[in-house]
Amino acid sequence: MADKVGDSGDGVKRKISNFVFWNQTRVFILALSLTCLTLTQINSQIFTFTVICMDDLIVENQMSNVTEPHWIEGTTEKSILFSATAIGALVGLIPSVPLLNRLGVRLTLSVCGLCSTLGTFFTPIAVSWSFYLVVVCRVLQGLGISVILTVLGVIPTSWSPKSEYSTYLAILSCAWQFSNVIFMPISGILCDSEYGWRSIYYAFGVLTGFFYFIFYMFYTDAPGVHRNVSEKELGQIKEGKPDHAIRETVPYKRICTDPCVLAAWISFLGGNLGFITLLLYGPTYLREVLNFDVRSTGYINALPYALCAIYKFSAGKISDRIKFASDKTIYTFWLFSSIIGLSIGYCIMAWTTDRNIAFVAFAFAIVTSGLIIMASVKCLAMRCQQHCHFAWSRAFLLITGIMILTNAPFPFLTTQEAAEYTKHKKSPMGELSEKV
Image 1 (cartoon, one colour):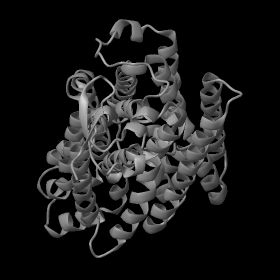
Image 2 (tube, rainbow, N blue to C red):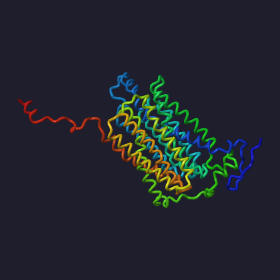
Image 3 (spheres, rainbow, N blue to C red):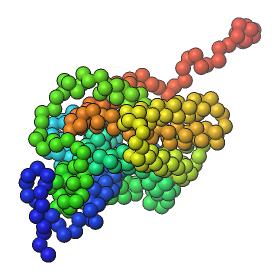
Image 4 (cartoon, rainbow, N blue to C red):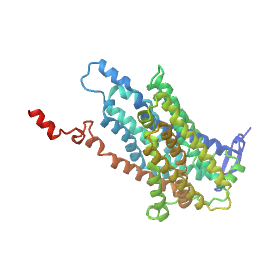
């Protein structure tokens, strides 16, 4: 059967396929986008887990009769590798707004996905060759995540109906939670298997390349030009939204001086600091502080993120149905409930010496922190509308810059040697007895 002809919504005729996903193409777009963002986030986190099970590199180094220790044993080298992802994200953020304006989400995100694929797949090979090649791979993984927060605000704005925005946003923002739910248990199993930690990079590298190819072939920046979007579904998506058919110049100065935008940036910066700390150092905390084994660390670290995903979906669904409260009231409640929960979890983790209580507090902090990003994204999306990609990119740029500045002194000032003030001083009587 021949394709149908419809209106894109901008007065331009378009071809409509006979298969329109039962008027739910936006749901397939959501699932595909979520999969790609999740895989990209996984790739940026793999090293934070595999670093606890790369002891074979030390053994191989010793067997080769090399006098110098392997770089995996050095705190400076590991710190550089942790920071390299942030550097890649910063480099990718600088041109992100012009690229998104000129190329759109489809091309920009696909290029980032390619960087993430290459950086992940070639990491095991780079490890065998040179530490500096591993740094390059980590930077590529950072380039992959550089526009995640930006597109997180753009995709729901373009593809979700106004009445489903919170639910759409909640599900899409679960990329951070799903990344841990998926890769932590898998990594724990593969690390302990005959295939080893290298198989993790190969598996997720291939998966990332495959799904980003599908994304590139299927995604469009506007539902009005997608051949699988029916006239009925297009009407649902556009209902109640302002018409932004004409591309406008981004008002950079007005956005950067908007008190609402500045408040959203600052609150996201503070709240996200707590979440990112748990995200990056959760496996190390469970393994080194709470003394869980490698496989248990994978499963146990995934549990709070699974609960957080459920929590976020429920919050998004409920907020779309609430009619007695304003959007500002809803996202303000999201933010402060998350901050309070995160603070309680951190305080208990700091004070308790019981392993079980510490893990419950760790899980509680992760679950309650899930609404921070939803509150900030919804606030900026409602305030900045078609310019929200710029508002988000600058928020992420600010965070990345602070991460680099605060971590830059670490490799140069830290040492593994015990400080002088930790050494026991001899008492005067002890010195006298030695002389006698």
